[in-house]
Length: 125
Image (tube, rainbow, N blue to C red; front, side, top):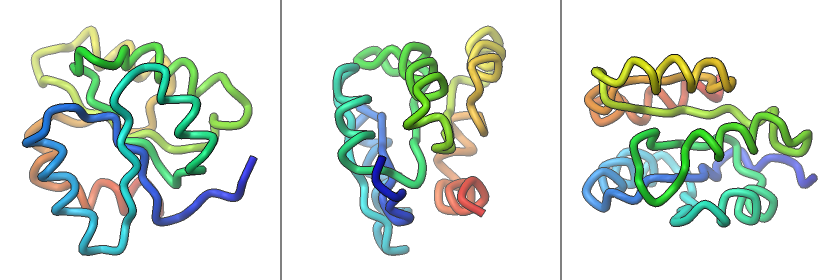
């Protein structure tokens, strides 16, 4: 596998308004975003981009976040890549399942919105 690109972040967020918030928080800091739009993009784009981290919307309907987590955390090429996920604060089952699959950090949608840059920097520290 390629060396991780410490400024490339794989973003599996299809909500355009939320993606824009993430983009606006990270691009000024010099990060490059690689957008994942569908399930099949996960392995392909992770292999190609060698991202420093993955941002994952656990409630996105276009991507099976659990399958993505399982793929990233079980494939030897990717399991070292930290994953920052967010989900509805009411969705306790999603939080528990994400943790059991090895997500590094999971936060509420509101916290992700308010602290994107800080959360990414904490994840990469």
